[in-house]
Length: 454
Ligand code: CS2
Image 1 (tube, helix red, strand yellow):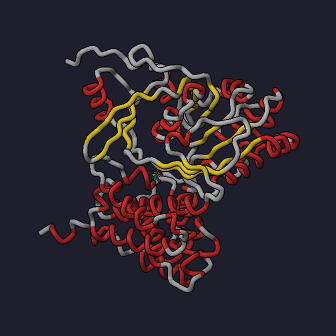
Image 2 (cartoon, helix red, strand yellow):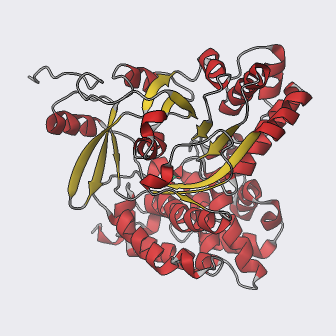
Image 3 (cartoon, helix red, strand yellow):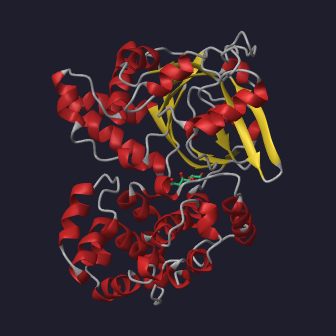
């Protein structure tokens, strides 16, 4: 029998309720451990409340709304856990409530829109355009954002900043292109207004945040003495690098450690290649070898070697002493090895065709342009190819095309998969041969347990 405990709320944990000046699209665990955490720790946090909208489902908003937007951040290190209630989300909203989004974006005091809508959501938005024109409610995050920006223009509510926090290189410009593509279809005047009034800020975001589990909920209950149905477990490490203008102001995130730079590209590449690239290698190679978490895969010498090899290749294209690549790599080994954080490889494996385009392709191309084979980058693609052969149902924005590729065999299959990542690489027979050769190197028959079954 579990005792009746009070639900987490502003009555249980008195937190000031800041006025809404930020809107977020993509209310999930990462948003809560990152942008919401940074906003809570800004020196002027009392002036910056967040209205956060879910993506596809209302669930996360319902759970959070029932506890006044409050949730517990559990920072988990090897040394133990620490608990903090975060109160910067003052309104949690079902993403389908486009009316509320429109209302908030039309309000002059709204100054910043942050996005964690996943890499896969930045398509050209061609599906959205007719929906907007016909007056029906858009269902994609960028479609909804465009509708909100149209309302802002109509209300003459002034400029604002859109801040992409998804793991894409040049994410500010990618967001701008996506938004303008939809806006142009909707109304040419709107696109011109957006170009003149909306600043698209690029950022590199980092904080490893696995999905919340029932055990996490039970732990918070036991340690904190209240019922929180939406805690978030994360590592102590966090990083946020931003580049761009905030024409209507922003929270003082620098007080919480955020860094503002003129040229973000080296920081983005460092994070996308070294952290996310290693994650993708571990996701496919690790699962092929029977592992389920990042820490388990990293403890397998074959997987670790594949990561180290990739880091060698990637590091050649990351210049600048202030990037501190050796320290960054050493820190990553520590972070990945934090076995108290159960970061599931299956979660990282999803949406590969978008992720590998950012994580493997640039290094592969740079290595080949320098006259080398790019074998370690090729291996990242190869282990994905091997993984989708035995796991054809893997979630992917191009799942139809992956299924088509899987109907082919041998090098034809590899060619079709590589074509989903990069047309030029797919035309290079040496590339295809290399990826094909490597795709059997982590096959299930050489799994970690293969030699032990006597
Ligand atoms: C991961 C990222 O799921 C994935 O693709 O590589 O979510 C990663 O954990 C974060 O970018 C860490 O900041």
